[in-house]
Image 1 (cartoon, rainbow, N blue to C red):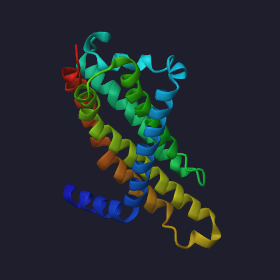
Image 2 (image 1 turned 120 degrees about the horizontal axis):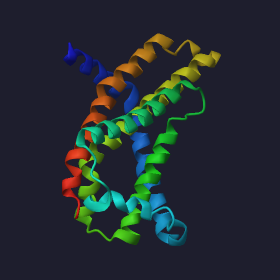
Image 3 (image 1 turned 30 degrees about the vertical axis):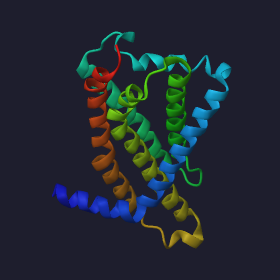
Length: 206
């Protein structure tokens, strides 16, 4: 049964979500570089915002939190964020889920520029502070935003008479979006929370 659900999800992703996912991924990479470059060349403007991210790179910079509580907190923080990105897709024409990609790009650009301007971590340490949980968290956010953009497109089609006949029923695309979020986004966020709480801290410099 589970295999069947994931097979259907793969077919749905390949047919409906893949182009959106690729475009949003490229937008994320491009905008992250733009924000990184902006803060690097405007250090005075970055000074008040960038240093606050430095504490995330060091083990001893904050009080150790109960690991279970930390996992739950990280998971629900990202769950709310990604759920908002997906559900906002029900608002037609505005493509609000793209705001999550902008937010992710800003955060990534700030973290990278923080290292360049203030922290001076070597490339390996910087990579290990982001990659272990980032390889799960970033795709989850982009996937959730892709679902949201898909919902925006279908909801908009239902309003425009010219495209209404080509749009699937509201029930169908709601079912597709729910399945995608539960089967892909939620497991990725759970994995990211576990890794960020239990693995990443042990890879950071003291």
